Structure formats: C-alpha cells, structure tokens
Image (cartoon, rainbow, N blue to C red; front, side):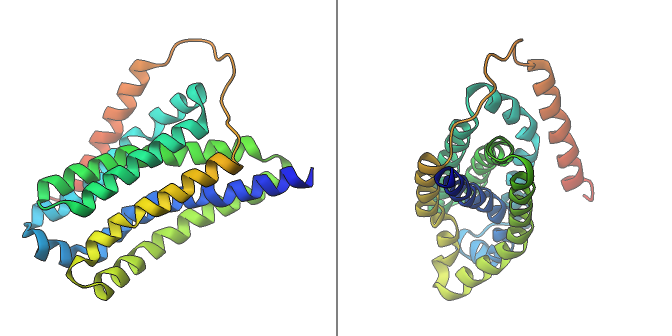
Amino acid sequence: MARLARRRWMGLVFISMAISLVIIDGTIVNTIFPKIITALSINSVEVQWVQESYVLVFAALLLVWGSVADRIGRRRLLIIGILIFIVASVWAGVSDSATQLILARILQGFGGSMVLPTTLSLVNANFQGKERGIAFAVWGATIGGMVAVGPVIGGWLATSFGEDGWRLAFNINLPIGLIIIAGLLLFVSESKVEQRTGSPDIVGAVLSVLMFLTLVFGLIEGRT
C-alpha cells in the first residue's frame, strides 16, 4: 500500500511538470520578444500572432480532448500531446521566419490543449478522498505558479544566453518533455472510461471549437 501511495505521488510530480510545460510556454514569449523581433525582423502584427496563435488554438480545443481521452486513455493522450508539443517547440526554436514561428506556435497550442484536460482527469482518477483534495491543490497551485514563473524564465534566457537565448526558451522543452514522458510511463497508471456507450459528439465538438475560437479571436482582435 505504501509503495502504491509513493507511486501515485511521484506520478503527480510528473503530471505537474507536464502542465507546467504548457503553461510556461503561454507566457514565456512575452519577455523574449525583443530578441525574436531582432532575429527574425518581424512586424507588430506578426509579434501579436506569435503570442496569441498559441492561446487561440489551446483554448479552442480544450473541451474536445477531454472526451477523446476518456475513450482512448488519458495517459496515452497526454503523452501524445507532449510529443506534439516538444516537436513544435523544436520547430519554433529553429524557425527563421515569422511564418514558421507562428505555425510552430499553432502546433504547440494543439499539443498543449491535450495536456491540460488529461492532467486534470488523471489527478481525479488516481487520487481519492483527502488525497484527492491535496493533489488538486498541487495541480492548481502549479498552474498559478507557472503563470508567474514563465516571464521570469524567459527574461533570464533572453539576457543570459546572447542573441539566440530566445531559441533556447523553446528548445529546452525537448529534454524536459522526454523526462516527463519517461516519468509518466513509470509512475502514472493508464485511465479511461471502460465500455463507454454512444458515439463521440462530433457536432458538439465542432460547435465548442467554433465558439471558443471565435470568442478568443474576438478578445484578441476586438481592440483593432
């Protein structure tokens, strides 16, 4: 029993690291923009979309992946999301134009949107009673903390590693992401809804994507 408890809490460490990875990348670019602008010679509109394309895709797809994870496995979808995220991060880190960087950020948002709902579901599935409350507190505190930590890390990388420090802000996700995947495979049990009846709600999924997409797009572009 004690061994299983230790395994659950170690799993929570890697679940928290997974959510940290995607939350940090939502804020880290704010402090590396000067380096990006200099390196890629991008204009103000392109700067806006480098940041907000990630958030746009991330928010639009959140509800879709929760239902998919219930069917195919939450840990499996989480690992797929992290793999997509780290591939997109490397692409962003080697980008030599605004177009490439924006496309990489869109792909990051696609992978990141798989991570948030699956980490939440895994915490709910792997903990019960009092432990569940503590685990949710850790999960929520991680999100809040990483929102604040992202700009600090971005500023440190941008000022301490020369002109290419902004690339490191993306490329560092590769080794961290691989460590997270290894930890998830070792310490987190698979979880899904067995024998779920009915077919996926395709219409509902499309509507949720369109509603979130247009809402977030309006919040981004409404001022202009």
